[in-house]
Length: 139
Length: 209
Image 1 (spheres, rainbow over the protein chains, first blue to last red):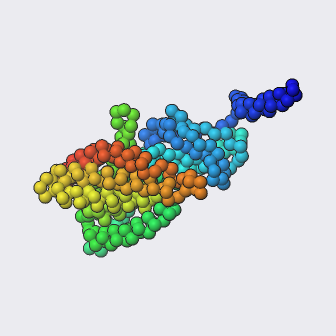
Image 2 (image 1 turned 180 degrees about the vertical axis):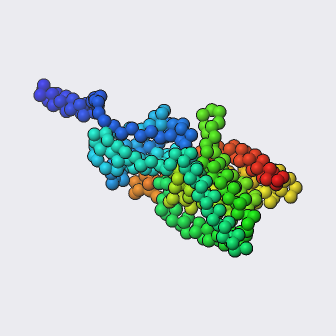
């Protein structure tokens, strides 16, 4: 009789063991991505996805924190794709070269605001200036 | 309002490129037909103004920040096709030098802001201006902000239906129309008031000179 009762008890213990969640906290290297709007305010609490190199199923999905940051721990080297979306259509889709030891580098998204605006204005006035010369010569 | 690269599926931006290309050809013909020594300096200055307005974020009380576009001003003064041409140039420059918007999404942004916004602005202005000039200018600016926002919200909101994995997971922008329409449109209905005021002030100032 005891053996008969011991069998289901052992199976139940195994089931409970499988459902338990063990947590650890350990020091390590992570890639921290900071997302900001053009005026410098953080891209807070918005949806993000991180993809392993050349994979189409997200490695990580979640939201940015209050400071507009997300972090992931790469388990292989390569170009990790990061996507971020807000409901009103802001966000980005870019890659970060990362390695498991936490080394990372991201291509810069354009020039800084002042340099970019200066260059853009130069191009606009350059195009219209050269065009004016042609129109004046023709007339 | 600029849609960033990576948010739209090729099923969206490739047909948009074909549509915009036709518009660019027509706009180039219109520009060549109307170009003279007086048009070019005015067009250059207001294109530069639009580029700066679209690139500089203005902080508002409460932590948010906004930018104007100058599309209402361009539309009232030059009409929709010249506006489409120069706004496309502005958007291309913003994508290349500032990282705002993008090259794949350029036709969608250009069609929404440069053509949709300017056509709506011109219609609103022509409807009201004969009787109420100032109201017409204000409406032009407001429509130049709200109509592109509505177009952008629809294009973004259709992405989950247009491109998704077999399990239904969206491949590009993940939120549907029920989310994008209020999220994009409602702020622009209010922000459009500022664009309307800017259009009224700038066009009135230019006409006095």
